Amino acid sequence: MSAEPRVQPELRRMSVDDVDGVMRIEREAYDYPWTARIFEDCIRVGYDCRVLEMDGRQVGHCVLTLAAGEAHLLNLTVDPRWQGNGLGRFMVRRLFEYACSQAVEALFLEVRPSNVAAVQLYRSEGFEHIGTRPRYYPLPSGREDAWVLSRRCMAPAGA
Ligand SMILES: CC(C)(COP(=O)(O)OP(=O)(O)OC[C@H]1O[C@@H](n2cnc3c(N)ncnc32)[C@H](O)[C@@H]1OP(=O)(O)O)[C@@H](O)C(=O)NCCC(=O)NCCS
Image 1 (cartoon, rainbow, N blue to C red):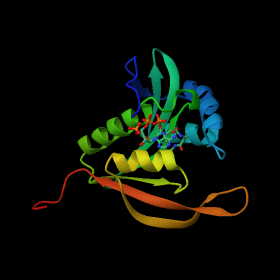
Image 2: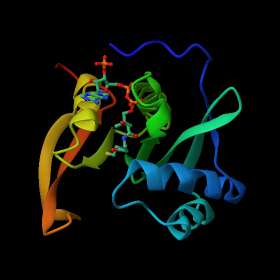
Image 3: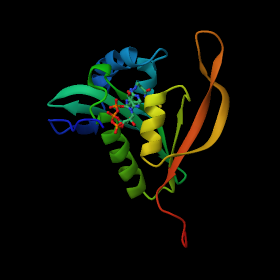
């Protein structure tokens, strides 16, 4: 079980001034990181882009979109030095609560099946595997499928 963070994390809105710090974490966390341009575009078009801070220090980030009654989690990243401390779960919970407060039906995301930590995290937070996008992610040689996971905000009436 991950230890509780000693300092309360804060999830605040991301600005373009944060992108250098976001990219430092992004490059360390992924073999195929997003580019600074992608984050800048997400901020510009009004996606919900957030920075995770511990004691004023940037330790993670996430990007969420809300449209047509659905929320999509496009990016969720914890600085490798801070992983395993409950911060990923903290962000997932906060984002799910926020998305559902915005009257969406469900939160969707894609994940590599080989990403054991992320799959475990999402499953333990109630996300279900609802589909597969074949050959979606790059690999050093070839491609890897994406699993599409979702969690509904409210159980259907009568369930
Ligand atoms: C996936 C990620 C966001 C998880 O964040 P984290 O802060 O390290 O995770 P937490 O400490 O909140 O752990 C939550 C749960 O995730 C799972 N988990 C975390 N690290 C794990 C590991 N190394 N192996 C297996 N499961 C793991 C566990 O179920 C854990 O719950 P537990 O501590 O009760 O066992 C983080 O590892 C990360 O940023 N990875 C690189 C980027 C990435 O893959 N993002 C997701 C893309 S879909």
